[in-house]
Length: 329
Image (cartoon, rainbow, N blue to C red; front, side, top):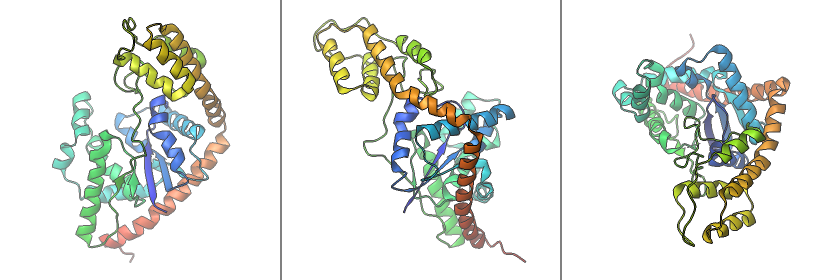
């Protein structure tokens, strides 16, 4: 069975964009691939989080992914810092990474622009750590978005460079796992772009009914259609996209008809959208609360994931150390 690896951010809550964009596909492929899902807590250290916030964020995001459908019986779900083999491989790959190529990465240049007072070496070598995450399991497939495609290509470069330098085919070249139907773009509530934490336009799986309703009712709209069957402007098309994700086809058809005959009332549309979002997310929120408060279960999940991840990583590092020339005296 081929191996798939995906990293999970360790800060913030999951929103509908995360859920429909990738998470549902992660849940689906657990029966098709040997899956490793990890919480990328080492990566988050580039922003220097407070220790208390650091642990709480890991616990929250772990609880949310489990509540949304990741199954520790089917997949290895682990915390990045629990697998020291990742850091060992990170050191070795850094010896094969060149400053010039790292400085040219799009994400590094963007981080420098956004945070000129925190240009640390961890930001510069982020692609090397990401490559270590992937290559330590010799993963064949890694689902990434467009913003991470350059990093995945760099992982392939390091795999080829290592294999070529040491004359051993230790690492396969990981490829982007493109889900059937492509990546789903979930719009935000501000009228444009996609839903995202940094944009402040998201609905989170942990939001309660009051919060969801308030957010949806404040969503951007326009003055309404003036001619039958007129094309929808982006702000309205975005609301219909969300409606198609969470509502029945009858509901979508009803409001589409109302748009086409110019009788649509945005207040009614938003109330229905909010109700249908709540119907979908509130059961997940209940699971999140239950899992978050069950420390014994979380400990069991993390321990199992750590054991499986370390077994895989250790097998890889035996090959790596042999290729490099490390030998016991």
